[in-house]
Length: 303
Image (cartoon, rainbow, N blue to C red):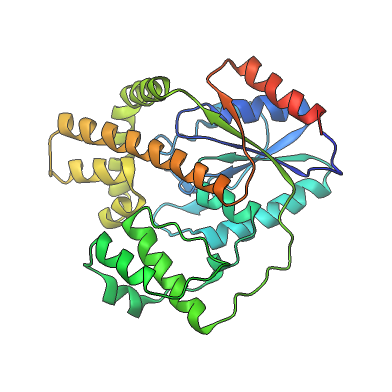
């Protein structure tokens, strides 16, 4: 890799697409280290549900995994700070950083150097928005002045509230410029065909379902509040609800399978939004690990 032209390689994709395996294989070739861009893998003891698969790293150094205890809250602003620190350290040691994950907001925040992620939460505002549905929130947001510096993600109820919070803050404050320039990154996206993606998600869930239940039960037994596990979403939300007796184990599996499929679809939608926002992503279709590596090698050689 020619460090004068790029200083980061990014591998992104939906859940169960093989991102970690590809990043590890690439890191072994180019003396790289992996920076995780996953909003839940930062938590210790949340392993199976987040798909950490630490055995896949095969000795390749990784960062921003297991840095907080379960029960704490971590956000994109903190991720930016942690990424910048780790990225600088890897580069100073002469290694190649590889950003790998499926949390599009985290990836975009560091590749485009979002400044709005440091805008503080407004508990009083959030209290006034509590209970409003998505249509009401969207109406409130669109009525606010729209800053060119802020490309809002309004795809979920939680993100709509955050978008309103940021837009209101920007009404009375100038957006601070970040001191660091964003890294020059070569970006690759894994794009399995829809049926393959669905089959892999369902297969992985079947293999890990009982283990995730044990993991969530263990977290509850250690005193992690059920509300916090529900806040983490997906596996932790639905399995906690099952363990609280809200539905059967069979219904739990069905709900979780549907939720993960929907999540993967939202991931792809967000990645397309990143492209519209100006990030170039080279998409790699369903293929073998060797073919994926060859694709990246060719791209690197053409720099």
